[in-house]
Image 1 (cartoon, rainbow over the protein chains, first blue to last red):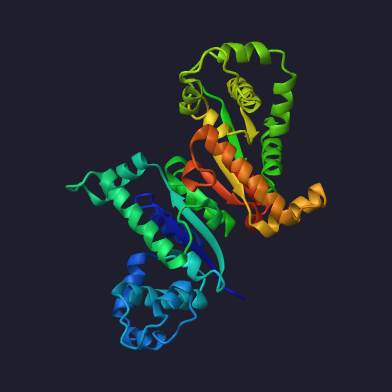
Image 2: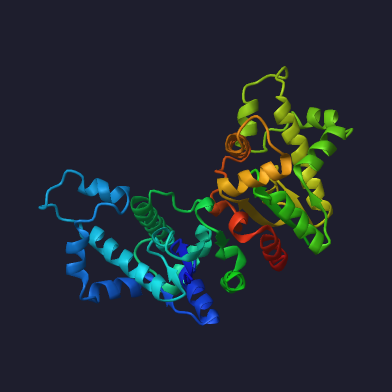
Length: 195
Length: 195
């Protein structure tokens, strides 16, 4: 039987990671967030050899085929593409190994045929998110709204680039929750209830 | 205290109306759907006088101001605009009177400042919806996918025209649910739990 995985995409400052951690804790399963996956990917010994092998692979999706079409062996992947490939492999490995919560990294897309996923998107209005990032990350030179817009733009572009889907469209998820209106505890309870 | 209203926007064939009815039944509050609101609006005696009065009103939103900008008293509203105004008034009256569930008719937008709303969007993938409309409405000359696409297009255009927002964007709702994946009973239970 496929493992059951909850994937959480989230707007910056919406508390999506906290909801993921809360949910995982209540369910007694691990929660993998972006930081954890990135660190593990960077530390992993298999990184170089994996990329060398994966570099010959052209069936992994349109973006990948395009990237390699007509390009000789001198072609070098961008660091971001390399990291994407390693993270993709790690996410597939994690889902193969155990039921868990995975926050970010397009895990919904990566696991779409590989695991029994509950695909979740967490968002909140600008005001609530601004409040939250100042509380958690502190003030910075840039106004919180500006920081949020910048991050939203990056996440949305990343998602679109690697999945060819629009970020934040209800139809791409089983469940979208406004954590600002519903509250973080309530969101986690809904996810626990559905699992 | 403002009444508490659950507004449900939904893709055709997603079972949004059924979820609304189920939820209302479990909560012991009424459910107003499109059919009921349209019939009541058409049967209402105040229709003509209300429109005559409302015709002088230009503060109701950009679309309305635009529609009337520079237009003399000879201007006639389209039937759709007339119906929108009556339905808008009816929805405001309903929410003023009692807590309830309202399905469709941009109620989320109409009530945004008038009631304590839980704004819900129900969707499902094409396959599940096609199955459902054939089961409920029977076969027709047009393939179910074609009927769905046509309806989606109309609802989306209607919503955009009167609200200037994009339909099906997660950020416009407190909660978006994939009824095909989660099941109609589960969706209703989540709404009951949140109320």
